[in-house]
Image 1 (tube, helix red, strand yellow):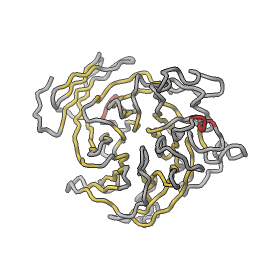
Image 2: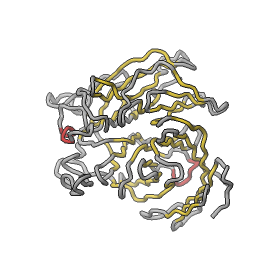
Image 3: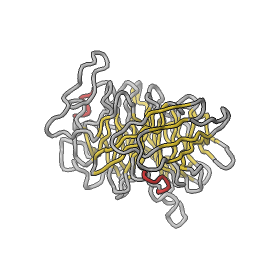
Image 4: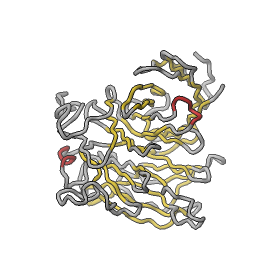
Length: 393
């Protein structure tokens, strides 16, 4: 156990590579943590550094090519963070969001060709999801705004789910680009009628696949099915809060179950992931199982998280600097305040390793940065942006 000053911004984590399916144990001091487990290789030393704080319930982080960060706040603010100067500014021009309950300004991603089109800014778009008010109800929506160096330009509204509804929860709203330049967007079941996730004429409880202008790709799985909305890519998804497309093109999501039953799913075109007919969780009031554990024609989860994990944020480790972590998924947890490493082999999780538990609070977003670091964003009235890096010290 290390003796580290209370005023230090950086905690040193000593993380072993664990063989088999092992959940590591945690020992902590006031400001230093040691993660221990059975190990067959040398431990990986990780620094965790608070690099910006004071965000009002931040939801997502994106990386500008010049090294600055964008951070969305659920209240509707988009913040620009300059790590060199430490300045945090609010960008003007975002639409007014409905931030009741779980709603607000949610995910943000840059266009895949951001900054690349002959320097003329053709593709310098910031895509964002948000809850759009409709009377006393709301819709999950997708828009994009032009980036003009230090400020926002025009906003284009690209998509809104077909039905406005209440209450203000289960928006889903994670975004991820597929290798062909199309965009995946999750929409939760909206929290009042779970059966909507099995309705093919309803966007709720699904993932969507859209073009970069919000249109429908010609090869979407249901474009020739008059009974199913053309945007739908998968169905039966309760509330996806983590989404990433891996380097091999596979789309993976972390998804809230009811009381327990949180899932990791490999999303593929045209599949039905079961909710609420199939579930690994229980009813909040009765603690009785919801649905069946498995049914023909519905896809079982790739992995079920233990207990109440409450997933949010999912990223592939793509940096070789992390050694044996490369190719693993990092999954964040809200209520559990955990960061887990999940090692995949042939589409299955063969190892789970606990990286953080409680040190930084509720984890809302996890991203692989362009600088060989992992970034973690915490959900709090004064949330923080943290950077994890391997270190030889």
